[in-house]
Every structure is written in C-alpha cells, then in structure tokens.
Amino acid sequence: MINVIRPLSAALVLFCAGFSASALAHNPMCECKAIDAEQIKCTGGFSDGSGAPGVTLDVIGYDETILVPGKLGADSTLTFKKPGAEFYVLFDAGPGHVVEIDQADIEAPGT
Amino acid sequence: MSLFAAEKPGSALSRFWHKWRFHINVLLLLVPLGFMPKYFADAALFRGDTGLGEREIGEVQVGPWSVRLAELRNEAPRPDGPAGHMKSFNAALCDSCREQVKATYLRIGKPRSLRAAGVIFFGTPYRMGAMLPIPEKTKADAELWITMEGWDGSMHQASIPLSQASPATIAWLSIQGGKP
Image (cartoon, rainbow over all chains, first blue to last red; front, side, top):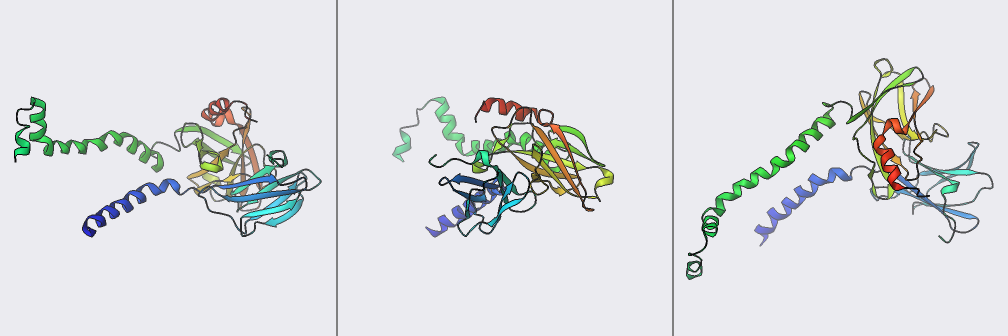
C-alpha cells in the first residue's frame, strides 16, 4: 500500500509546485466601511490571503495633512472617528504598495 | 481465459484496438506539442526576446528623464481576486537616467502625493515591471501618470492618456458599463 502512495504523493507535490508560480503575486488591498455615523472601520490585507497587522494606515485630508496616523491592529483592522474635513484613507505597506480609498468610496453603514 | 474468447469475433476496429492499445499510448507524447507554440512565445516574452512587452506604447518624456513603456500583454486587465483587476506594464529607463532614477511609479489619475504615487516598478532598469490596479469605474478619458523619483530627491511627473497606454483596457472598461 505504502509503495503505491509514495510515488503518488511525490507526483502531487511536483504538480502543485509547478502551478504555484501563479500565486506569488500579492497586491495590497484595503476595504473601509462606516460602521455607524461616526466610526469608520478599515481592513487591510494582501491578495494572497495574508493579513496586514501593524501596517501603516493613515487618514489624510485633501490638503495633505495627516488627520489620523494609525497602524492596523492584530486583526488587520483599524477603527477611527470620521474626520470633519474631506479625507482619504491611505493603506501604506511601503513605497509602491499603497491603496487609496477616497471618502466617497466608503460604504455607508447598513449596506 | 474464456473471458476474452468471447471478444474474438469483434469488429476490425476492436481487433486493431486490442492488438495495438499498448503501443498507441506513445501518441500521448504528441499532446505537449500542441502547447509548445504558446510556451515558447511566453518564454520569449518574459526573456525579452520579443521586446519590452506585447504592445509597445513608446517613449514618454518625464522631466529630464524618459521611460519606454509597454503593455506586457495586449489584453484586458486580469482579475486578481479581492484586489480587483490588474494590468501589467513594463518599462525601461533611458540610457542616461539609469544611474539617476531611484524609483518609478504608475498610477491612474494624478497622484495626490509622492507617498501615494501608485504602484512601483521593480526589476532591472532595462526591464522593469509593475502591476497596476484598474478600478472598474475608471473613466475612458482617464490618464496614466508616471512619477519618477531621483536619488537627488527630485521628482518629475508626466501623463499619457489611458487610451494611448492600453486600448484593450479602454475596451474592457466600456464593457463594465457604467458601474457606479
């Protein structure tokens, strides 16, 4: 029995290794939702399914002042109070690995 | 023994099959041949033998520097799960600016700041690559902005119409049809 399974599993490993290259890309992604009238919750991550705990997430005004400097928590989320001024959310996992979310693209509560 | 005796008076095709079935499997070796043209085309594309990409966009002047842009594939953006649709671009720095340019970024629409300059090109200056997310609500008259940052701290920007950079993307956007 074991003699049969060994080559089979070896073939399976080779097969999986051959197709794994397509899963190497991991693009940053971020989603923000208004959980009530005052609070906005943002969740960051990467397209390969990994989370982004500790990654910088800043809330920046249209005049480029940083309104809320933050970092994502252990659950890859950050909840902040909605600023009074116009703003956008910048998920910043390093140069060239950013996601911007404009305030107009943040879903209202209950949707 | 008697099991196979019943099959003896089969059709000519059946007799042929039973006589040669163990040898015919050699034909399976031909199956990979069908995939070879695509394999070699891809290998040449990624090695750079067929140019910077499937479709050259041309030289774009960015301040004192210039960059040669190309679409890796002349096709619509590819879906990347929850990250949305991505489009791959390749770029090559001009001969004189390879030593001077620290980073090159690509973004749809004018960047708000250097921090949010878009996706970064990675790879050798002769052949860099970047995967640009294309939001489905991108307008057909959108512009592709190239931001270049020098080692001396200077920053230069230029833009080209998305319709010039990737007609396939514009065609794809028109099919997405007025999603909010």
